[in-house]
Length: 124
Image 1 (spheres, rainbow, N blue to C red):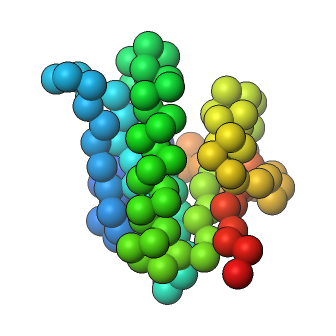
Image 2: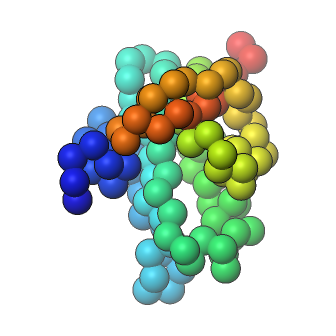
């Protein structure tokens, strides 16, 4: 893994909050979690394999349950995430999870890619 890649961030962001690996049988579908930035606020991340395409409904249901559990367990009122500009499938999916776009961030990714900031904010 080279420094400044999306993959190199996995070890860093998973240290500061709950992280999970999704398996279907013996195959890893994805890893993800929420890094706790400070009380009430977390940064979500997911790195999915190609196997996600065969398991979209199963994976979506699991993620919805985990997001709710993490929000409750850690008292989060905001979970934010970054999605690369141009990744329309990921943008549609994160919106189905209840996240709203907050705008584009230039050269935000570890590889200097432009990203869109999304957030899921509680109503209370």
